[in-house]
Image (cartoon, rainbow, N blue to C red; front, top):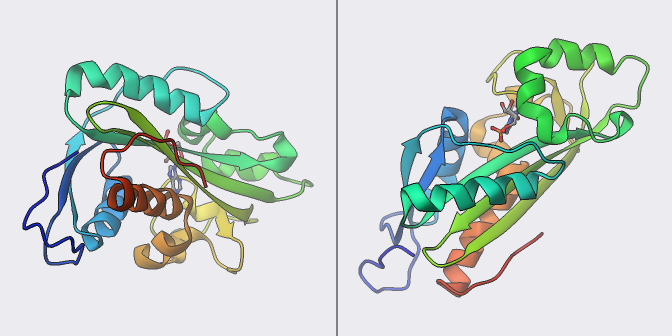
Length: 208
Ligand code: IMP
């Protein structure tokens, strides 16, 4: 775990308490996570790089495998995060294949697949953290529905077609600060932050 500065025990905006490497090639993820973690007094060092992802049916296992491989090259503490959208009426598809599906058929393709189907979906984020000794995972999930058309805005992945529960617009039209309050990533990161605050470098796997 990163060094503590000042020893006040406070996690206010003004003082960075931990410095943790975040490994990702995705600027949207970095922006969302940076804002949440900095508000909790945790400084993020973004390592903008792609890493290997195996094909697996579980996002948790994919993330664990990637993190295990990164330990050798990164060494000190770091975290990664993997996300996926799960569409009930498509038996959980695209789930762990969300990245490939977004690159291939994209949101338009998903809308075509949804014709005549139940539009319930959920978005999952798994954070995997290496504290220098052990790996820990934190999970967040947000339910919602797939919109009937694409709503351009902040065009990050599936955000233009995902309407979170309790909203009547897609995530692409919601400000980042509001998205962070209700998103799968926001939930996983808050669980991660709580772990950092509560347990220091104690080993445990958190699930929400
Ligand atoms: P990965 O975690 O980068 O593998 O993400 C899988 C797919 O989900 C990619 O196509 C991302 O663009 C997309 N994605 C990840 N997080 C979000 C999000 O918060 N909103 C919308 N799409 C996302």
